[in-house]
Image 1 (cartoon, rainbow, N blue to C red):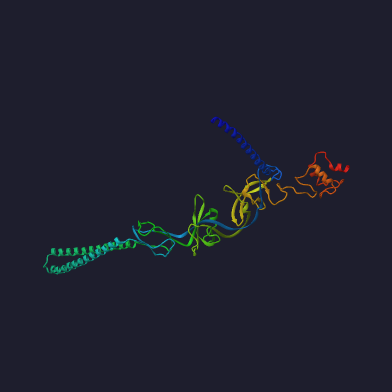
Image 2 (cartoon, rainbow, N blue to C red):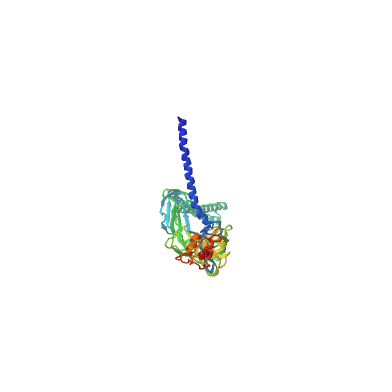
Length: 467
């Protein structure tokens, strides 16, 4: 039974597979036949783009290289940044008991930003005050001892002069005075030491309060109340948003023409329709060794606060001079890798020509070398063309790829009828415009077309006239 089922399945499956293969083959041939006319047209067949065939045909438009004047302008790009940016950090470790600013909040110079716990330092300050008081009491004691030693020494001095006191006793009193004097000086030194410690503690206590070093806006708040911070831990970032700075990179050729104080026009991609003005403030005297670019710093007023840090900006510097040069339409410029160039037409084919470009002004590009005024280049459609492609210039009649139109003598271009039908139309009394009565000589303009559609030796007008 299983063998019979297998045989029955094969008898059913084989015809179905054959039928499916036949249908697929017919579909493939139908698709192939539809694609062949288009391929024939692209190779220069009837109605195609080129009489010689080979390669694809691209419709293009041409432009002419002209000469004109360009304004000396330099276009740069860069990112906006704040002129001043500071990360506010404490000088001592401790716990934050208060943070008084938040992101986006304006702050003045010297405004209180945060406070760190200072209970321990306050106790040390009190202890320092007590130490100073003890030292001051010691100083008073030492001053009294010194005064007593001086008075006693004066009394004994009179006795020595009277010869009633030995010299040894006098030297002992003198030594006691010197000791009292040195102890007083030591007490004064201890007082100065205690006062210095107190000033240090006062400084440490003042450092528990963190103030803003600049006027600006809080860009970020990085800590919250209750956090433990160390010395140097950033608490907040404060930036000065007016003016803003653009760090633009200028090429070696352009930076030599930029001058400090030049006015600039700035546009920002994120603010379409807005234009800002500024000035060149600083020019780096050192170029990058790898790129040969130099840094140009531009300041832009930002009174309304519309400009933000890290926005991408385009800068245009007007150098204030014009010169005569060769101009190429912008649509004609193409790039092969990093090499700029254009396509010209030679023998109905596109050929890439490398050029060296200069300034860009509206829809024109300066050509430094590679082209001259009056040269014809491929304009619109150049980005679709490859080197060696056949091209067809659009908008000019008589170019390859256009079908023939009915002629003035009733002849049809590439769609002429059979020779017999042409003979009948020529001999009929009421023929089409451009037809001929019997016995009339054939017009010279129609002879090539008629002879192209007749067999060698056939002369229908001679037969018609003989009748």
